[in-house]
Length: 104
Image (tube, rainbow, N blue to C red; front, side, top):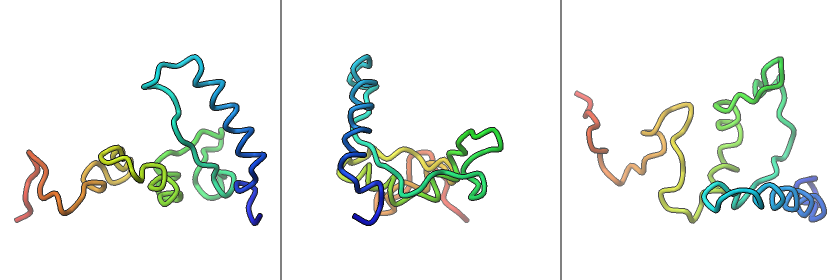
């Protein structure tokens, strides 16, 4: 086992905590899948403020592959990219979005 996030005991412990929280939530509000990140978020890497609040836009960029893996198989479920906006996550083969302007 190379990374702590691959430890089945850690995953089971996190799953138990998620299940406890989900118990009091409606189906729509429940956490259905999760990912344990390969490292802690840090202020040095720009992911936390000095008061330890998460800077979501930076985390979304740094862990984009992990986030994409969460949504794989859930067509249309990927939320808009908090940094680049909704157009960044649109499928280019879908053509222009309704109401979008074409560059001149």
